[in-house]
Length: 211
Figure 1 (cartoon, rainbow, N blue to C red):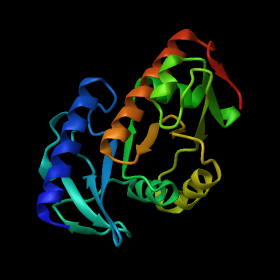
Figure 2 (cartoon, rainbow, N blue to C red; figure 1 turned 60 degrees about the horizontal axis):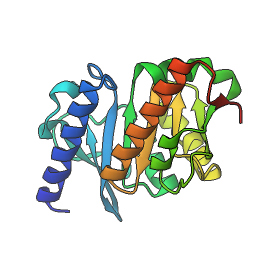
Figure 3 (cartoon, rainbow, N blue to C red; figure 1 turned 60 degrees about the vertical axis):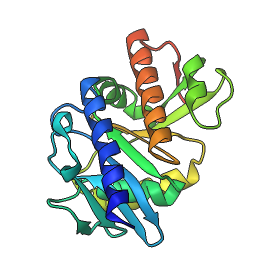
């Protein structure tokens, strides 16, 4: 993959990071973003660890291989690189986005005992890939947070392989993961799910159910 392709994706990822910061979804150094440069052998463009998303630039986006090793760029890849790789492998995603918004963080704790939360009845659900009616019931699994994502990533991958209908998942007291065929679709899914989480959070239990 050419450096121009990495530069192009790095520019788009940087812009997404800055926009997500402005919306309060990735304050400070929280969150991480990636996009597939080449599916075979797998190469990802991914944000560097510790990057301030409000000031994110191309130089803070690295190229890594399928084992998470840096091929190009300075710094370390996100501490959750193994989760990005798990999502790409489980769902054939072309891009993965992770935010730490207040509503995703709060709801991930509120519904942790249920193992996830279901959202239904909202028109905005139709912005998710393959959803054609507001009567759709979207399930967001909740997984426990950990400091060892390399060890936990196989479980995330297995969950996503078995629950093919989901468009995202929450990490308890942590935030939201979603993805798409490309960065554009991943961005749309992020906007839809963050909207829905905020609406559900503000409405209390309206629109929310167990699986």
